Length: 555
Image 1: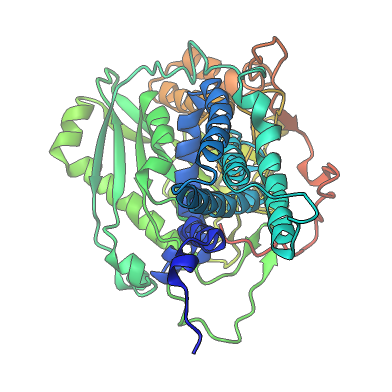
Image 2: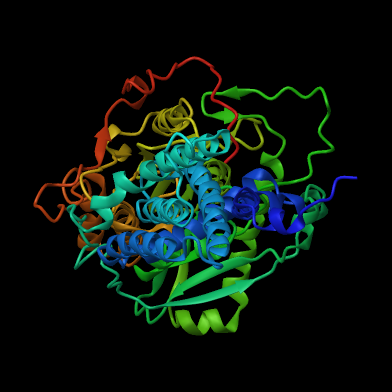
């Protein structure tokens, strides 16, 4: 019978390396074991990573110094413990650290290819520093002998494995060293005055309530959705001295139900003097009732997926409930004072899935006569709209005075770029009715700028408050506030104010100028594209103008 040396196994660096790797990867496998999807597990890790990386940014300079000190301390500790009783413990500890940080580093590489796109420098630097420190500690506490009598298959395997890990560590560490050391130009701060400065004309009061939803909507909810307390949020400007206030409706993206994702956008809209409605509506649902032989068709920025019906009708139900809440809630009425909500002045917009939802909700609201005096539409990184006749919306209802912006982000990896370009064509043509003047329907491209650190990444998630940084501060929030100011000023019959706001966000100049890097070089500006369907930027050929597959990305 073979006797197992448990003490020797417990002191094995290989074992502790595997344990560290498994624990490091637990951010993915544990949520999946407890019922989450792979996407859900990674999405939650992304949120946590972004928050941690943003915190580390405040320690630029010190972080680089600390990383180098960590590596040196690990080497000195390993040298001092080599051949001593605690040397085995340090060997196991560094093996655990190598395994843990290696798994996190590999996860980072995957997420960087799909999401971060080089925007995060502090996290990979830190992971690289920890990996290098672990390797240095390993090599000093238990050196690899290069003498002929000390070379063995075991030593060879250890040398190869540590060299491989070192390569990974250097790929994480070196490309980000100058950025983390504070040696690169830094991007502009948010505007010091005017739109985007945070100096809004009004403070904002927040309200929320939970409507009752009919079975036609709840029948689609999965177990998770049935457990949620679905809410509608209403943001109201405080101290409006005018007789009326305009309205804004913001529609969230896929899995963007949590208020914090769009909280800054809601404050930006309401702070300019609009009553803002933010309805939560379902992203995922139970599709077991859909026939097995159902064939999904994508056509020119739209699809006929059954999920549109519960999503869109739930969003509209929330908007309708919000109007009833505003009219009947004593606290809201007290905040508004003498001002009345004037739906003739309407802003509506959405991000990603919310952009597709906008087509239906907008059509329903326009059909009731809303937006008849002033009307702004803002679609950010748009995903598909419905093609079912009862859900696709009627764009011929768009009034002649409408001002529309469709915004594409250069590092768009979530949705097909052609979707927004097709939607621009649809909105401009008003579903083959009389087209709007081209200067009233702008297609904007927000560009990346990697000149310094933090890098400016025009990603799909830039409009979400969770990753608010310089590019969002200068390309998104000022535009949003100018749009809101236009609607608010129009509701107050302030023609000069409305004119000034319109000029700001509908013409090249202040809107497209995104400031300068600290070395005086201008940040790449927002592009106004005249013919989006004809764009051929190398990564994407011109979008076909006949029915074509738009891709099956769910967002």
